[in-house]
Amino acid sequence: MISEQDMLEVLATVTDKFGGFMDKWKAGLVMAFRCSASGLFYPADYLKGYGSIYGIGLGPVACSESLQSDYTTPPAEITNLTRSISQIMHPLESSRAQLDHVMISPAEMKSATPVLVVDDPFYDLRAPILRAKQLKNPAGRIKVLQSKFENL
Amino acid sequence: MLQPVILEDSITIGANSVNDNVIVSNPSLRRYLRSPFASRGRLVAVQSATGLRISLDYGAKNVVDNSDLRVGSDLQEPLDVLNASWFPAEGDQLVLRASNTTGGALSLRYRIVLEPLAEAGTDPSTIAFPPDTRVTQRGPVSIASLAVDVQQFSGIRYERAPNNSILRILMSGSVTGLTRQLFVDMESISPPSAVVPTNRVPQDPFDSTISGVEVEKDRQMELSLTNPTGGAINVFWRMILEELERT
Image 1 (cartoon, rainbow over the protein chains, first blue to last red):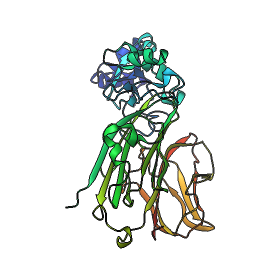
Image 2 (cartoon, rainbow over the protein chains, first blue to last red; image 1 turned 45 degrees about the vertical axis):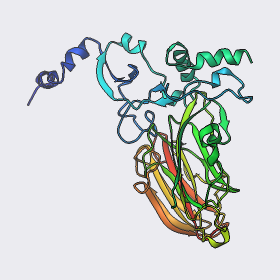
Image 3 (tube, chains in turn red, blue; image 1 turned 180 degrees about the vertical axis):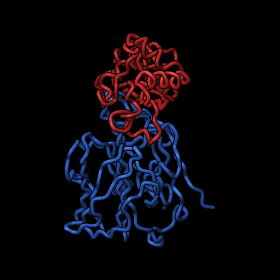
């Protein structure tokens, strides 16, 4: 009968072929999925929860649910129904980017944790973050519209 | 020579706002606000992220009611065709309405194709217009854990068939575990059956699950969902009512 110690050694040998998983685990690193579009780290259960709490409606193949700005489509026009300039921005789009499996430190994970769709279904938390980026991006056109709105 | 008219555009719908007719928002497309001839219409549409709803009317008739769309940046025919069977007469106004109830701006990409049935100026009484099809599409709709008989058609425009029609339903669940039943009035059409876990807005014909159901005018349709699992499941469905006579 194989002892527990032998089992662990066999496991370590096998998993080492997949990038020294045991060493990284012992070093206190955690599993995550990095979105290749935004660089944000999704939790280790992203694939397990895909379709139920993550990636809802994005199809059967797991991809990133992160948002990005579409600078090629102009912002909506300011009309007399526009109540706030925060309504005007370049459209947001689901990146559907590739996810890469990574082992990172908890601090690194914490520094780039995304706002999950399940926690923000109506973009109340994510839209201001992306709008701020649009204001800084040279490709963005909302800065001009902002001053136009303020002068109305 | 009879040539089709093909309108295509991508437009931003501001956060928490409604665009009453996206066609007029593009000055180049305004001349096609009215159908230039008796035609067969086809609507294809996608949204950049979840949160938009669209409706399509021609003249005084609704053919797509308050529907959700696939998330994508490319129009894929025939998978993103929402309704390919509506028949405006010459001069009927096209109204494609989009509403965005989220806090972020989203874009709608759409294509409307009008294939002529007759040359412009033809007497409409000499044209045999086929019956229209009416469509409603929703999703994601969250079905709570251990929820029983959650009605999907309650309160929507086509809860009762507006005319004698043939009903088709396409469905997709976000994960395994959901079951659905269909009733027409007291008649059980489909006993509790599994919903495929493809986690997407339904694709025609791949996600077709119920078809060929005869529904008389004013009869009530009930699509009832049960989630016996320990977690919430999202569902996506499309209801297609193919009318049997022109109204």
